[in-house]
Image 1 (cartoon, rainbow, N blue to C red):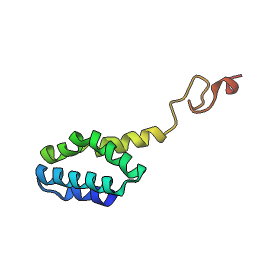
Image 2: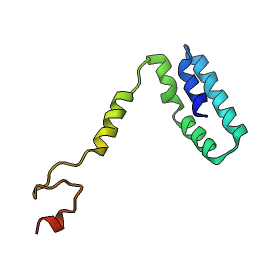
Image 3: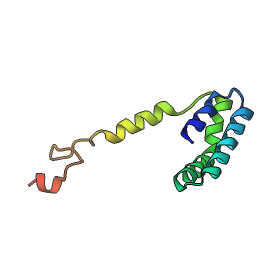
Length: 93
């Protein structure tokens, strides 16, 4: 399924991409495993966003990568000088 999805971005037109997505959904149906079916349902829900790439030729990949980095960083310092990840109640005594 993952390899099939990558072929979507090889398409040069919106119609080709839509056909590749349809092919991916069919592959998921024939596979029949719960994980693959769940992935296909998720992609189906995000289909307008996936296909918008073929009309704008832009993605939000950079902002998503930055969001992922930001989630992994410790929070801002608190009044006790510790990170917000640490339990401040016991450290501030």
